[in-house]
View 1: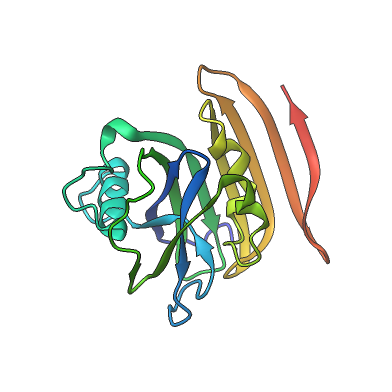
View 2 (view 1 turned 90 degrees about the vertical axis):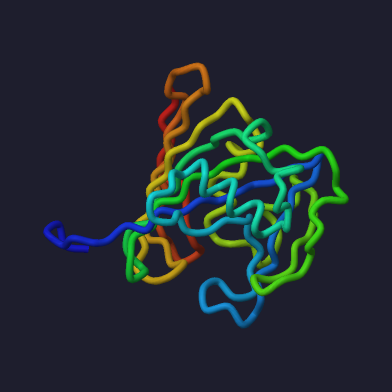
Length: 197
């Protein structure tokens, strides 16, 4: 990407829903134009005149069918971090991640809809799922630890083709804990530098 190139950034939210030791993933329909057939957390675009928190609540409620906010509400949500994708797509993307803790696995009411099928899976299994969205394993450890906040920037050459990735992690109560830098190799992204503070 040229230094002088001006690109539009699409704001979006990712909604991680936990219930005990499980998380709710969307197995996206094979007919979807973006990320067909992959497992991902819930979420979507931030609408005009909408903030990230309101967008996260709206998206989580829409995709789970919790229209009345019985399970998805501000009292059960925590901010986790931001993932910025530069290049690779028509627009750059900035996604803010939020965790929602729910008490009942019987939720959600709507399990299958136009986006795909919702499935409860073990939290510990998420990074190893064969068709999990490429970026989720790079922030999953921090998502599971509700005292960590992450900021990630990924340089892409094509959709889901990451050339480099830089991650910084803060403790909730302040202080930079560590930074990691990954670069693309023949085997995929490889961790090439860790800076501990």
